[in-house]
Image 1: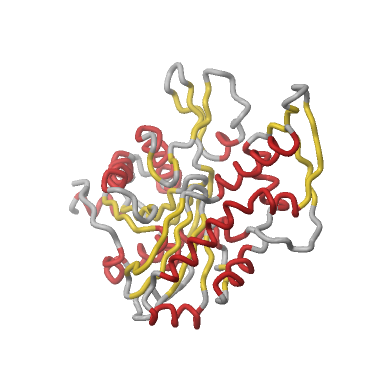
Image 2: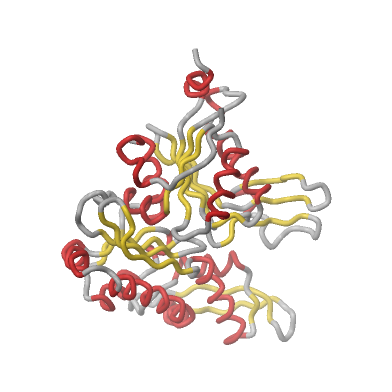
Length: 349
């Protein structure tokens, strides 16, 4: 048996949504099996990895000075090659535990932001190969999200996807398996968290942690007033006294805090439509715009975009996993969908 066939029999082909906030792993014929934060806890003295994923995220803001909980990806691209490699290696090994494969060598499809540089692409590719992949395929996240949302991207009809992740928002109009018009904004979930932190500091002299801001965004965050009258406690450190402080905020206040970033996203959608050929705009008017990614769950965002574009807006089924499911669909039918992949250079012998 050829070495490649041996590796194939011992390995699962996997798709990875390598996100700024979360990494999702799709296993061929099994679906999404891992959804964990893209966070790694490191001992700075020894460079030892102490925890990865959910366990590492629980350490954020709570570690002594020699331990740092960090994200190796910034705005969807690799900022720390070594830690990204360890992160991928951890997830690849987790997928193969039950196969008792000492040397898993899977084929891997990785979703990356649209418009990244060739250097950034190579960094992802090399990290995956170093982490144990036998063969690496790269797909742009808007295409993966559209495939995961079950849009017919290979038809001669326009489809529009807005993928709002942790580090980037990808807006794309797709036809015949390619991106015709697009915008990539580095305003997404992390920026919305920072907006809430800034609002608390400016309005209430209150210093919030990143996790607290994210919880407030998830619980009562809104892109436009919803009329639900939701409230949540905002706990942090008083910047004047230095003591703990808690206040109660409502969804209207958080909507105000997020308004500038949300308007940037809405403008990106409008500009993408304005730059598209008229025939594709007609298709989008008929089919509507699809929202994917965690940001799609922000209350009132679909209505706000619909009002700004005079176009129906739909939230994809399970928007958080769209990119991962898209990489999985590509894995299931690699020959038919090979044209949507980016060129790659590395194949492990």
